[in-house]
Length: 264
Image (tube, rainbow, N blue to C red; front, top):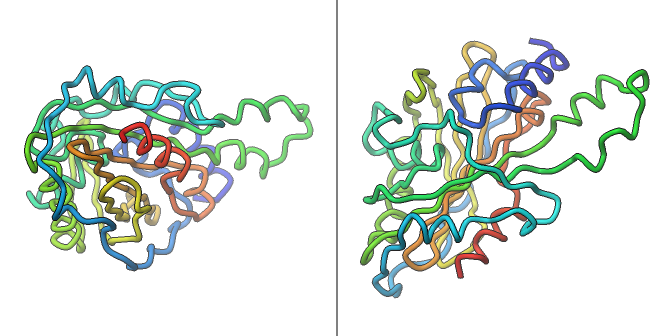
């Protein structure tokens, strides 16, 4: 797939879909170098007090709302995402927390959760050029937009700390990859790598997954998980425009920091 055609195809898919399974095949020519395996989790849970779980309604109030992150718009999570854990299958049990985080589902031992999507808003740049002046580069740049799928879940006792540990264990156990099925589609993850976390909240962990794009090379996505007390926030960044150019899909620091601050 050529870069320009790949960018157009992936950008079109990005408008209506956020889940990883819906972007299978939307890659550039073997896009992406692997992220370096640098540091491990930030923070410590050893002295954290036992927590009290929040309800779904309480979690929804803690999600970022429109106007709380400058330059971003907030929407409901895409309806095509798995509605429950039973709808997100994985061939290795240790990899389940990673898949749940990528689907904004509660990664730990609870079913109560809340999720939304926070997307870069480039509308202010629209209309600055006439149609005849728009170049191929302009088309690619217009879709170089990151949509971040944010999920919140909360736990009783030390459940949040145990959930964070499941990511450390999962990244190690799943480093060689796994296969996930959601929305009737199967996606092969070929590599999982621990990366440097932001240090937000009381504890944070980050990793990247390298996805096989059905013979069109690979694509790399970043996921970060942050614990604040008994609440765990998951962040999964999707930027199909960046991937089509050979880049990596990352979680925007502005979104992560704003959500973490709202959980304090």
